[in-house]
Length: 193
Image 1 (cartoon, one colour):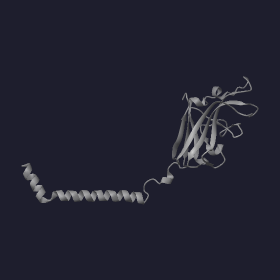
Image 2: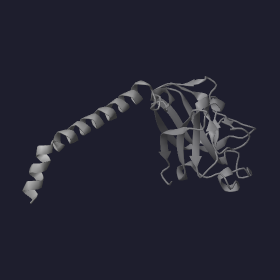
Image 3: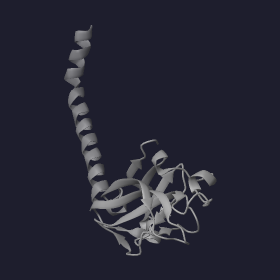
Image 4: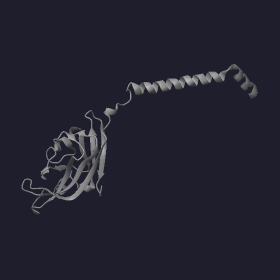
């Protein structure tokens, strides 16, 4: 019975019809893929995050120059762009976890992000060059003491609830294209994070 059914199918030419349908379907699918690629209906490459490499260097006891009459003892992470695309500094953020941050200026004085500490640092606030390229760096900091003796009451990691040691936190370098789309370009984790 099965042999008779198979013989009747073969005689009616069903097999060539199926192969033609499959060939037409494959042709339509290939045409659709090529059309999408050629006419740019996929994500434009220029809209993706830049390709860049960053290195992180941790200093557990960085002494700032005199700032407001004090020499502060800080933990510092130096974030350096080492290779890859140049990036507009307005599109880069340094985002910590578990702490707010300050930064160290080029003259080794303690700088503020906005006013006081901040939950993230826009790189254009720390670097006025406009573009971050290989060799450029910023230094992120938290204060945990002063060389002016025990009378200094601003040991921020002890007196501020939103400030912790950097080695107990992590940092991310984040690209923000300005339209709400972000991408993490690099990440550093403290030894006790």
